[in-house]
Structures are given as C-alpha cells and as structure tokens.
Image (cartoon, rainbow, N blue to C red):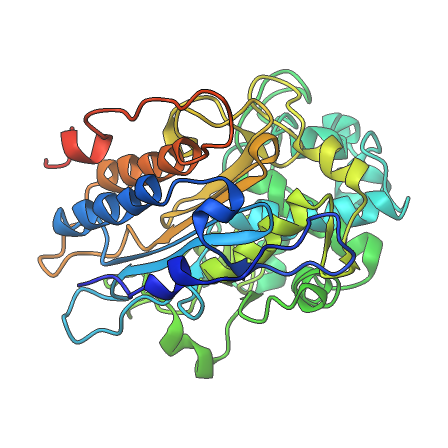
Length: 413
C-alpha cells in the first residue's frame, strides 16, 4: 500500500508553457519553477497515507497543477483492498466519476451549444423537449436546471428491472416538479439528466457520443468515457462488492439511475483518470483552449463558473470555504465532487487546479463501508496544501497545525 514513486516529477527540468500559448500541454515541472514550495507539497503524501492507514479508501490518485505545469502526480494505495491488487496509477487508473459527470460532460456540452448560439440560457426547456410543454414545466429554463432551481426532486427511483433504457428515460422526463421553478435550490440528478436530454435534442447526438467527439477526443483525454469496454475494466477501481445487481461493480456505473438509463446519463456514468481530468482543468484555466484546440470561448468559461445564487455557478459549484475545496481557495474557484469519492477544484486566481480521485464507497473486507469523514478531511487537506504551497507573493501563510488528517475527528464509528 505504498505510493507510486514520483521523484522524477520533482527532478524534472521541464519548463511549463505559457497558458496563453497556442500550443500548451501539461508537463511535469519542479514546484519552484511555478512559484510553489516542494516541502509543503510533500505533505500531500503524509495526508494521503494517513487516509490509507485509517482504511478510508483502498487507493487514491492526486494531480496538482499550476501555470501549465504538473507539480504533483501521484498514486497512493491500490485499486482494491487485497495486497495483490495493482497500485493506483494517476495516468491509467480509471475511476467512476459519479457527479463529476455533471460538469465534465453535461455542463461542458451545454457550454458548447451556448457558444454556438444553438441554445440560450433563458430558453424554456419546452423549446427542446415536448415533455416539458405542459403545466408548470413550461416555465423551466436551461439556466434554472444549471442552478438546480427548476423545482425538480433530487432523484427518481428508476431501477433497471423496471424495463428498458427508454422506459427509464420516460420516467425521468415525466418526473413532477416539487416546487415552482426558481423558488428554491434543490440539488437534482433529475435536472442534470434533463440537461443531457437537451444536449441530445439540440445536437442530434447521444450525450456520450457528443462529448467523445467534441470534447474528450479533441483534448486527447483517451481514458475518459461512458461505458468503458471490458478490455479497459481491469484498469478501473472497483466501487462496490455487494451491489444490487448481484455482482461486484468495476468499470460499470455505480449509480442505479444512470445504469437504468443504459450507463449514459447527464448526472453520472463518466469514467476517467486523474491525468485526463488535469487536461480538462488546464483547458478551463486557459479560457477554454488546450494544445491549440478550443472547446469553448473564454467568456463562456467565465460566465458558467462565476458565482450566481449562493455558492452555485452554472452547473459548477464555487468554493464555500471548507469541505472539499479547503479553506484557502479564492472566491473565483470552482469545482465539483462525486459520490464515489471524486473531486476537482480549479482556482483561476492562483492559476491552480487540484484533482483527487478515490473509491471511498468500496466495502472493506469485513463488509463495512469506509468512514466518509476520512476522505472528506484528506481531500480538504490536499486542497489546502496546494494553496499553501503557493509562495510567489509577499506574504507566506502559516501552515495549520495540526492538519485535519492528524486530528482524525470522526474517523472511527
């Protein structure tokens, strides 16, 4: 259960390219070349190891980048609990991203269609989906879906045994509103699924095909996909042993509604590696372009990641201070988490991103689920350490003593 050796990362003599360059790809660089402290970043290993020792997750992948350079790219632990399980590799180990699907796939697709003037944020959903042309649903807009203010419930009990993927889709489309549109915020998987259906209606392509051909393929994110083929599943971190499907889940979406929809849904179903998500994060920091490939306009990135109501942006969340983004990210920081143990945070003010992927719901050998407080504290500490490692300003912020992972509050039942 030892971390993958990453000394070559710190010894690299590469120089990061300018984010504004027409051709700019992520390279491994020494932290001091991008104004970061190697000593403070080294504490990431201590924190990740504390979580492993507490058995909060079998393994974890961490990637941190700044100014177009990768300053930390490490795997910790293994894919599964047995000692014989392969080590986590941040460039190869695929994780079920769960709700990161909402931003990496669905919101990005909406951003592209917005850029192309094929949708407007205040368009009624009824313009694209006939199921929304009746009653209060006629008032629901694209913007309200992105803000989780459409009045839809958090989820819908849609199980595969109820029938086909098309039957599951019908149940999602006919889900009744619980509140008038715009009245209050309810974090809703159903709303994200409706956005995915809008993408399909406007583009004429299935959601997984659209993002594969227009986002992940052009960015070179070759390990990012819905429904990984069987040949790639051995690279996937398992998510559950005693699943309701009667077999362990590995490389197959954990979320039951996404599974009922055929493995492709606006709210869940995407798999990826930490290294691929680093490319996506850098594209967002670059204002929508990476290695000469423009995905969206810089003004669209700003629009969708700017705080709107409360801590919510459009599709994205902003850092509320604490939780998975830690205490030190700026007000401009945006990101998201996933139920399975995944997170991504991007801070434009410090030109910094932090990706942490783990399979924290994978049962221990005794059948118990790891305590969620372990990963919650570890990834908050990692976000803090990334920000505290920035040392190119006139004031160096003091390190917290102790770290959350050292306190280990609520780590045992």
